[in-house]
Amino acid sequence: MEEDLQKVKQRIDQRLKQFDSQNKTDAPFNDAIDHYGKIEGYPTKNLFKVNMQGFPMPIRILGYFFVGTMGVGMITVLLLTLFK
Image 1 (cartoon, rainbow, N blue to C red):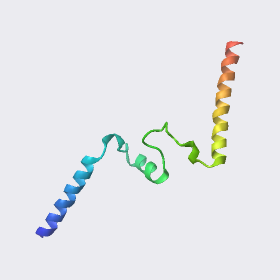
Image 2 (image 1 turned 45 degrees about the horizontal axis):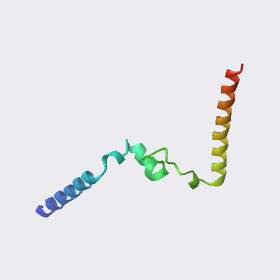
Image 3 (image 1 turned 90 degrees about the vertical axis):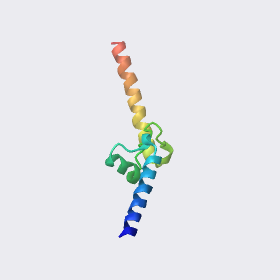
Image 4 (image 1 turned 60 degrees about the horizontal axis):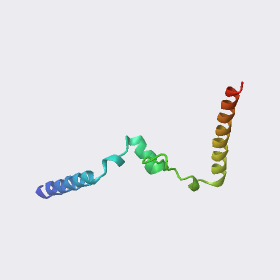
């Protein structure tokens, strides 16, 4: 019984040390965000540093097409409202 109690205390101390050593800013907001980061690869640390080169070529082309279309559309709407 005493040995089991010592093992439990050691495990608790080890977990407390791990918890204290973690950087609090990198902790996930909740379990869903933690799941997205670990299982699905969702970038939880900095959303502005998404590596577009890691995507397959068709998805990259489609993404660039949509971003380009939105950019050209915004410029077109701006010009049409200015020169109406």
